[in-house]
Length: 212
Image (cartoon, rainbow, N blue to C red; front, side):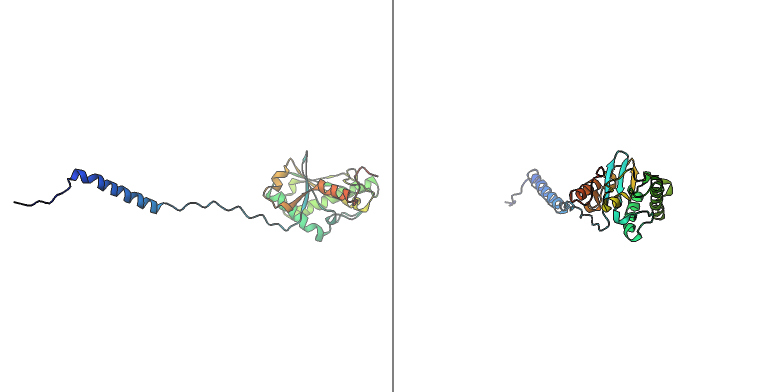
């Protein structure tokens, strides 16, 4: 009698083959899947070591105030290049890279001397700053000047420090928003001009403009 070995019929073996193939495919897919994505780290804080500009939002646009140390002596329209250079370079950089709005340079004086003399002086001071900004690359067509003599003081002329603050040129970026100029900048790149003035008044360094 011929002996025959017991064999599993083919129809019973196929499910086992499919299960094995499926397991192998899943294993290979798991091995080939990309590693989990690591979320990006927070950007490093902006480092800034330049001059801090005093700024304010006004109905006409953004005002930029240069510090008294960078401005003018009584009766003079010449800037101190050592003191004013970093501030004017910073202003020029903002005008060239953060905004394309027109700019008004407003000249002011203290109340020393006659009205006519101070009107001429405030015009000369605004023109001085205009020429400096043009030399730094700001298009001349964007820069207009206005002069106000001693009619718009920011502090009382009763003290020397107050008079120094009043001998100024304000940079007014017309129809601009403060957020546009300060966006992406380091926290120490700007300060509120009015907060600084209030601090000086509180410390007794200057008197309010309305004071005698």
